[in-house]
Image (cartoon, rainbow, N blue to C red; front, side, top):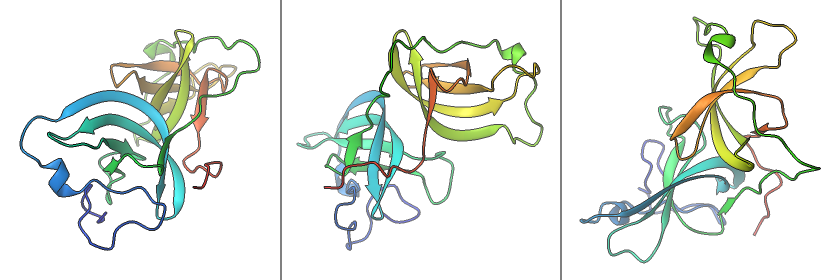
Length: 191
């Protein structure tokens, strides 16, 4: 994958065991693609390293026999791009949901007015992955902001998006119902 394109553009290909970028020709076939929007935290192997990322869309190109996945591991507006379309291979695998030691309550919602004003310099903005417990199940989420509420005894609050980007809100970052996911994944199974 070139540093400026989310599709493969060189003939050298990925390193052995790395995720394979979807060929431009496959992604630009005429006709309607079948898209399934399903957010899922995954591990992807790029440049010989496993990293944690968010799979946002499964796509079957028109007339295609393979599935490709849109995967991002950072904000989409960065250079080089922190996202791409990849062929479904063993170099792309789901992250396991958090293990539980007893029941885990759902994440606690925080009213926007309770988190205080945003930092004028944007220091509270971020892009990180997290598991969020809602409706009795774990959801794959992206955290976009974090703030310390005005009350000193309260934990941080995070603004997260989940549910295929259809739901968002401020949640208490208690470490139990909102669990951050590290950017790199050293626990991935090497195949």
